[in-house]
Amino acid sequence: MMRTDAAFAFKTAIVIIVAHAIAYLAHEYSHSFAAWVSGYMENPLALDYGGINPGNLVFLSDVGDNVQYDPIMDSGHGLTAAAIALAGPFVGNALLYAGLYATTGFSRPRDSLASSLLFWMLAMCAGNVWSYVPMRALTTHADIAIAAQGLRISVLALFPFLLVPSLFIAYHFFAKVCPLFIPAITAGRAARTALLVSMTAIWFFMLFGGVGLSGSYGPISQTLSVVSEALCLPLAITWLWKKCARAHA
Image (cartoon, rainbow, N blue to C red; front, side, top):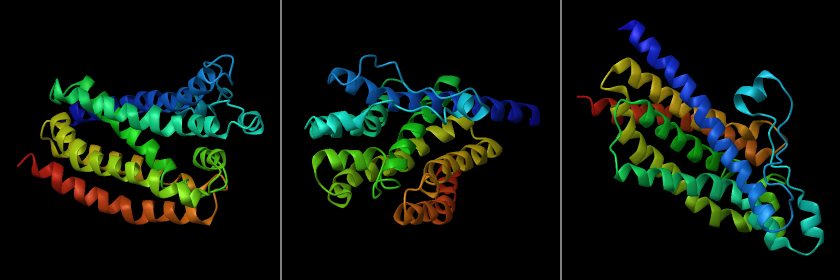
């Protein structure tokens, strides 16, 4: 049993890395392809891929969209700049999340590699949206600030309109997706359930939710990240364990 659970943990780690890479690149390519379609980028595949180091090779930590927003703003096409900026979190991640979840209507989750990858793809898409709204929405740089600049409004004015879909995705993921997938993927085994519950909450509320603590995003983002890590994380673990472990009973 220990060997089997260890293999499950190893498989989960690999799936998480792959799912994170796919969701991350979907985000960045949504920016670049939106810029390319708008005529502001010659090659949509020409991301800033960063250097060769462990963090970048595994987590793509240095990869960026390579979109030059200043010329777009200077040419008077602020709406285009806003659309490009919002394409990352809300096309590359939110829309992808909706499309991926729609596939569950054709095949129920089960203890399989495909179901595990689908679950973690949903987690990464939802987490990416969370990392921007609310975590890095009320700041002076990054996607949401660029969108607000392009729309010629404050980030505070834009915030409520983006917060609604972000909160809905977070709610849907934890209330619908997790209770559907985690019991199926873990096949009713407590150790596996504990692993998935803890990893899901940590990735969502610490790794995605904690982004405001770095990158000079300001006191509001830092405060939101502290709340995400110190309050939302333990609450999520407790709630998920009750929901997902109960399904085994």
